[in-house]
Amino acid sequence: MFAAIEQRGAEIRTAKSSPDADVRASARRIRPCGPSTRQRIRAALRKAINDALAEELIVGVTNPATLVRTPADRPLPIVWEPERVERWKTTGEIPGPIMVWTEELLVRFLDHAAEHDPDLYPLFHFMAYRGPRRGEACGLRDADVRLGRREVTINNQIAVHGHTIRQKPPKSRAGNRDVTFDADTAAVLTAYRARRAAQRLAAGPAWPDTGLFFVRPNGHPWHPNLVTQRFLKLVRRAGLPPIRLHDLRHGAATIALAAGIDIKVVSDQLGHTTTTLTRDTYQSVTKDLHRKAADAVAERIRSRRGEAL
Image (tube, rainbow, N blue to C red; front, side):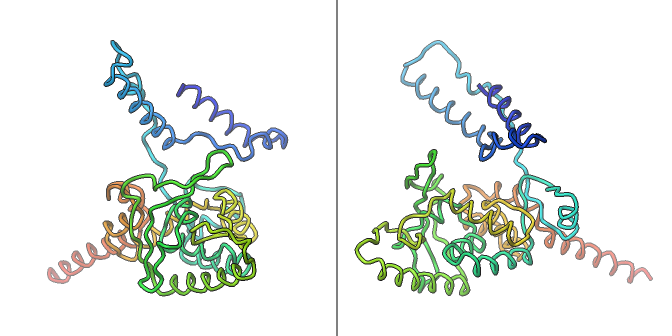
């Protein structure tokens, strides 16, 4: 099964890079199964077969899912430094699958989104500043937003199954969390709530009571795929180097770590189960921390040289 998954992924990647437009079109909106997804598939199979063995639904076999080896390496975020942006403009080359904007590029995007997509701008702002997952932002409940205290509780998400959406709890126990935010985000969300109230008043009885905070101008939930499509369109029209919507989350973590925020605080903000995942994923791109360490070493050596002279 895993060999078939890998073969299908290779076929999709080949089609996407084909010089034939029809072949490329055949793979549009189809993604290869990545390492993380394969890990989750393996974990689900291992658990299911272990349960069957424990209940003696099957006997006399070893759990084959424990013998499968799946790719363990996660691709690490790469920052769109000015030199990389210039090369992308010339060649179209994207250095890696996970790209992160610098703070300057993020500001350009948010300014563009505020002007050209005011309906989704508050959601994008929230994701860029505090790093919730797409489904968590779309599924944020109105009753869990406390603007006066500048905090929200994340305990719900909108998941996509095919094109159907449904609400469910976050992906892990750590995903249930309180997230605090800054005064700027509070102002953006307060203005959004006032605008939403005006839209609800204009809609009258036709306004659906979803209980969600971020909703479309007609009151219905945002479909996560539509949010992604609108995001990618904004990125293209703003002329910005491409990132995925999920990379706003990576950017929020990277900026927080670069600002010197303790890694445990960042891990809790993101809803990671352990700080190990946070450290392994983001520490490599927080160059300011390494630069400070390098400067500290140089200062100590410089002082010793001064003493020797």
